[in-house]
Image (cartoon, rainbow, N blue to C red; front, top):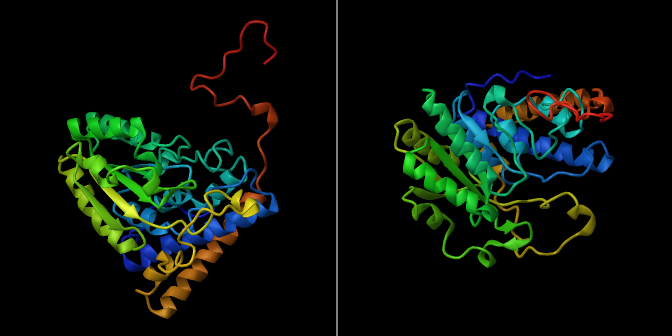
Length: 329
């Protein structure tokens, strides 16, 4: 397994490139494992949106918190989780971040501040707001960043989170990854007004950011984190990005046709944008390093055991499972 210690270079040009390259190749390797049947049920690929996770997480400290979405592998990796244990989680092995029980959409690693991905649209904002408020009540100087998609901005629980965060000046950064589609529905067909206007209505400063450029996302997030640490409350960032791959790998079979931007979809690739800021030798060295990490991650995952079916009910309750009288459980 690789060392998940937070890298002090994450906010540098090399560090940002390493992160976007790691996330890109992790996702591509994961798609391969879906096709081979080693990842059961498929995944929601993060390919194309790597700059958002890389830039946001590079602005955070090791004790800061993140919550993510069903398309959350990039958030987990960018915050510092071990790629080998993450790959083991996707393949349902006991060596995974959550012993193979969280899978693709519920991965968490409290040790590096990852409170978990979440398959409920809009729920990540409520969790991050509550966690950041609670930590501050305990005197911990932490900031939370929460990722959600454009489809979440019409969800009541997210709007309630905006209200609470603004009222109580909660140190949370709301990050909307606007990739243009909520599954197959275009943003313009689902969102009245503007996305940033949702936050501005609650008095939350909001900005639109180039979500294909890791450096632009990092700069905007640093400002937002600084505001939060200074006690000035939440900030909202709309990161305009592009999902290069399917909403879910299921689309690889059914070949849905709903995009209107197929022709120019990959014209601004965050890996190439950040890679162009490095010299060729450095970029090649990082690429080789990432491949070695992922070779090890895949080997570790596929070489790890599956959970014992007899433990299927373990971890359902913090205090353990108490069977009902007369139950065979």
